[in-house]
Length: 386
Image 1 (cartoon, rainbow, N blue to C red):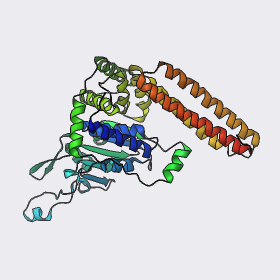
Image 2: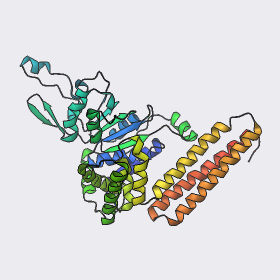
Image 3: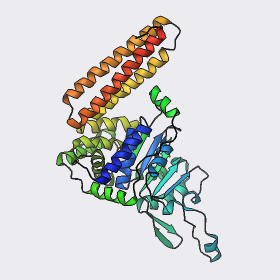
Image 4: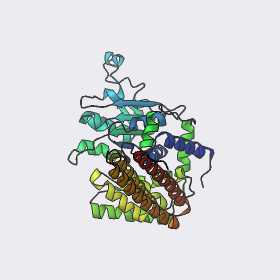
């Protein structure tokens, strides 16, 4: 088990981010893994789903990290990322940009509305993302970039090569949606933008990255990843490059480290469901294939919680009717569905590993709370008391 002081700092950050950004655990873990592996992450989802807020809070955790963000549109020029041309350089008959306080000298870069940019901007991002360099006139500048975070509510079309080239550079792709749980939404609306209590330095991050690189990998985990990628390529016609497979190993190491485990096992390949999907049409199928080669418990628990969330949402719509019989029936139906979900979770608990048993128990607590809320709201709607 990983217990270093640096790891404990990351655990505190992870815990506080999950408390502040409810229903965003996948996005939080994926973003932290991106930092630990020096990879880039794409946050995909509807506007106003806390994508930019999470990146800003995460960047604010670093005491000495430099942060830069920009919003792109079809009218954006490379100046939005790399700064304007230097007037001093132009006076000397040189074409060079004034790159201070731009993406060139930033440790963390956030590019909002990434895919709204035109081809010239997209092309200019390639060297920064791949080689961490910027060609400023005749000079080549080495850039300190750790990770670039992109945010978008649209994905590139298959025939748009300029967008697809950029899309491939986002190793981790995280989808988010609006908050489903009513109480979570209420709590969010009454809360200010959170701040994490722990500050970490860039030296801490480098220490964490070194610990991640030293994380041992179980051979069964490697076999599981190879078999999963083979099935994804064969059944879904999704091409996965050797480069992406190679980088996926580091992502597995980072995820295992983040969870505090001693080595990478098959349990950890669930994180690869955020690595190998290419478009929404294959996202769910990729996740299903990966879950079969790893421990399927996390995927099944997530699906059951999603079902419970959908049940709660449908119940809250139905309970607004003025028909008392319909309200009663809506409550009875929702309670029965939640009870069935609880039964399935108990079955999962009987076969879960020690680490996943804790995850199932957390889910059971959530289901218990959901059941209580439905019962109370039904009683209120019927004018009775529990």
